[in-house]
Length: 483
Image 1 (cartoon, rainbow, N blue to C red):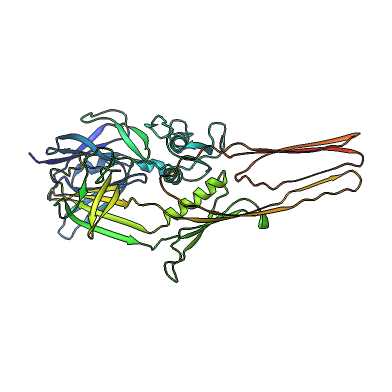
Image 2 (cartoon, rainbow, N blue to C red):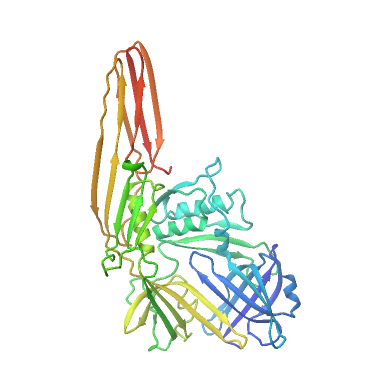
């Protein structure tokens, strides 16, 4: 019996299993091989190669679900679903030797998260949701593509909310759902996936069920050398014989080391923040400056958090692709899996990495390749920020010809350091500002104004005039974006 076995199942829209493709690879007839990539967050992709004269390819339709089932005899791992995806593309090739090859191409179940934008404000949902990161993530999924959506995706449910992660709050109407989830995950921190829940192994029929799931602070386990979680350490190393090859890349091509955030206001009253990573002086030409709109952020703290996110996303990247040799101690899905923290030996040093993706391939001869996609764990940046805000308020009260005008301008400079272990945000408090001007009256005019704003700096202008003795009352109340 083979130590590793694969089966690929095809299900129609009703969940009926209409085809099984054996996963041993073959040169002629049936399925000739496959490859897929599963990632945390964004959707992965798959390609299945099938003989062009296989009659089963005529049954393949858009959004038929392909399930990749995996069994490892050495690891005593019974059949488990390693990947599921929607058929979205197909390719036919007529080769020089007369062989016909058909390819089914698609994306993982997370493609649902790309398929819709956050709806605008309505009675049934809101685009402004705040709370611990897990909460707005799951609420947005529920209201955009889940059971609470105007156009719910068949079979999709949302895992119960655990209320974990740092505070997040933004108004994100008409933004793509996946983009919003990635932003929330960056703040959380957290990882998410859409996992198929049913039908289970060997069920030939049954509705296809999927669930959106979230994990804080990461999806997997800490398996680094010296971890304090009590997990058996896993070190990938050519010297240890569990690695075929390592592809290491350090890149600053897409770097951003200075960011300016544009807040609310107009012209001289515009509120701005500027923050740098400290790497802009690494060379005479190292500076890379970007601008971000942060008007949707609720507080100054969140504005600065958005700029930190921009610098984190734009920092030099350290990526690693490790082609794994499955020894008795490094079996996939038993000793390591997606989301785990591991240690890798490369170029004479040990690097702590997070497994953010897995690539699996099976060739026509039945040979399996397994690649772990990793990103660096060290995400600390020493940051310097400068915020400049100008607030102008004018109040004019006229009884005969009396005018009062006041203007104030403030500028602040803040120095801060950032670490991924910083404490969670607390919900910003609701602030209320009230100004009342009164005098004896025979005629009364009353004005009450309530407005919602992002930063705690406001610009208001209130004028009330009458031809006789006047009483003017002005009340301005400000609240944060999210309920």
